[in-house]
Image (cartoon, rainbow, N blue to C red):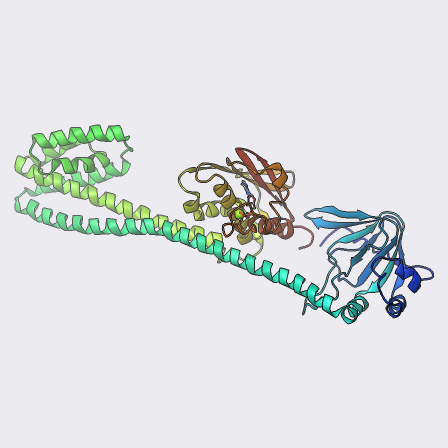
Length: 490
Ligand SMILES: Nc1ncnc2c1ncn2[C@@H]1O[C@H](COP(=O)(O)OP(=O)(O)OP(=O)(O)O)[C@@H](O)[C@H]1O
Ligand SMILES: [Mg+2]
């Protein structure tokens, strides 16, 4: 899969290959051991050598050796995304590395090196096998092992339980928001349906009255035709400003008043919203002929307009429900495979819809997307979690008012998603710490401090990308950089 050659580990036995108990006692790790214990260590360990520049241990390899530095300088590095980050550089005799947790009984989990170790100049080591090291620790220091195991496993369980809980809480908050969003259009649709039922009943009644009025069949024909025209006109009516609508309503109301149309002032807003004007009413008057029938005809057309408007309200409401459901589906990726080629915008949009309720009306959302961006290899549901965590923080930072800017662009061989807010920003001294697990400035119970830790692990660990924070008061941006190609190992 990878075209990079795997670098060789160079840890060679050296002469004479052993240390005496007296030599071992000079290492701080062993200074308190009894003579018998030292003799055992001397018999089970050996000395080894690594030439300058070579690799001693590789991060991720099974942890088989416990290593103590005797001479030389070494560095420890950890792989972060595409880069090797040096965590330690030391020449201190006696420092130890490698299978340092071999004694922890961790059913089924194989210990692996947590970092790569390189000799910066010629280096010598004292080496014990992980199995021997584990045996001596458990045998000679049973109580210490219990305490260490408790500490390590306890920490791990706490973290797992909390991140599980955080996920559940996030899901709970999201579904509460979604329910709220769904409730509005559903209630609107059901209200409109009730009103529609009334109007349709009214129309049946009106039809009877029109017919009983012995309208001449040609006239009735003309009226039906007029109704069609009016509905068509309503569909195309340009939206009026509030001022224009009020003026129009006044004109229409006056017109109907002059002709004694019953309930004229109630009908005026319906006609105005439907895009009708006085010319149109004149048309109706001409087609109806008699003054007695005009009242009926106007109401008849009013009903037609109202039912049309109610039906489009229902249409809007139900399509809002469908779009929310499809956003929720997108968001949770219920029906998609885990890892695939995706357009980042799809996930960003569905996350924004899902968080619509949380974002609220005080926050303006600006989307500045580069739609020409290529697809990238990713886990869409995991990325949605990243967008959710970052947007969630941004919205909280702005406490209800500000601008949320979501921008996408390309930078060399990465797609970059920038999520910006106009909140107070992250102070310089905290910028490095925000990605740490459990780091939060929020009150106890409000934040777990895992949002960014989880996001970091998803982006850097899971996608071989990077998250960068740029912040000054009024302009804070989280830049999520995702590679265009699949990392060589996952
Ligand atoms: N956009 C931002 N503006 C200002 N501070 C931020 C922003 N994003 C994150 N922070 C800071 O980083 C801290 C850590 O964020 P993180 O999302 O990891 O945890 P949290 O939001 O505190 O809790 P959780 O997300 O688990 O509910 C926050 O407490 C906050 O101080
Ligand atoms: Mg957060």
